Image (cartoon, rainbow, N blue to C red; front, side, top):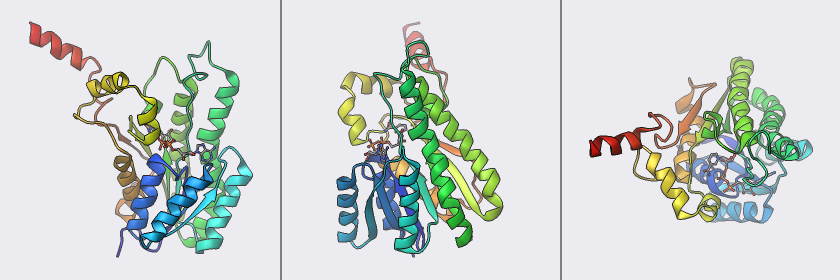
Length: 266
Ligand SMILES: NC(=O)c1ccc[n+]([C@@H]2O[C@H](COP(=O)([O-])OP(=O)(O)OC[C@H]3O[C@@H](n4cnc5c(N)ncnc54)[C@H](O)[C@@H]3O)[C@@H](O)[C@H]2O)c1
C-alpha cells in the first residue's frame, strides 16, 4: 500500500523540475497522475515514462495563464480517473530582465506574473474544490517561494505574486477545512532544477552556497518529497501552512558568514 494509494493528482507545470519530481514520487506511492504543462511534448513523454515503469499517468496541454485551460485540465483529470483528490498548483514563472525594482519594473510583466503565478492558483482551486467536496476531501499544495518572505533588489512582481500565494493558501484552508480539504504551500529556496542549473553561472551558485546553513544545494526531490508528505494522509492535521525548504538559507542572522570571518581574524 503506497502513501497516496487511491488518490488522483493533477500536477501543473509537471513536465520539468519540481513538478516532475512530485509527480514521479506520488506515482511511486500509488497515485494516478495527470501531468499538465505548456510543454505538452515533455508532459506526454514524462507520462509515457511513468507508464513504462508500471505507474498510471497522462500528459496534457495546459496554459496556466488561461482560465479555460485550467478548467479543462481539471475536467480531464476527473473524466480520466474518476476523481481529483490532490491538486499541485506548481506553475510559476520569473523574468530577470523585466521584473525589476518598483521604479523600473515593466508593468505588463507585473500583470503577467500575477496572472500566471497567483491567479492560476486561485483558478485551480476554484475548479478542483467542488470535485474534492464530492470525493469527501482532498489536499491542495501550492508552490510559493522563499521570495515571498524576503525583500530583494529585483523581482518585485515575483516576490509579491508568491507572497499572495502564501496568504491565499491560508484563505483556502480556512474556507474549505470543514469539507476535509487541506491547503498547504511549499516555499523552495534555490533548487537546482534543470532550468535553474542552465541559467545560473557557477559564481551565482557560490553566492547561494555561502549563505546556506547546509553545505549543499537543494534538488527537485527535496521539494517533491515535501509535496508527497503534504499530499498524503500523514499530514492530515496540517493545513494553511507554507513549509520552507531552503537549506537554512534564510533562517539565520544574514551577516553570519561575514561575522565568522571577523571572529577568525580577531
Ligand atoms: N527552482 C527554484 O529554485 C525555485 C525556487 C523557488 C520557487 N520555485 C517555483 O517552483 C515552481 C516550479 O519551478 P521549477 O524550478 O521546477 O521550474 P521548471 O522551469 O523546471 O518547470 C516549470 C514547468 O512549468 C511549465 N510552465 C511554465 N509556464 C506555464 C504555463 N503558463 N502553463 C503551463 N505550464 C507552464 C514549464 O513548461 C515547465 O515544464 C515555480 O512555481 C517556481 O516559481 C522554483
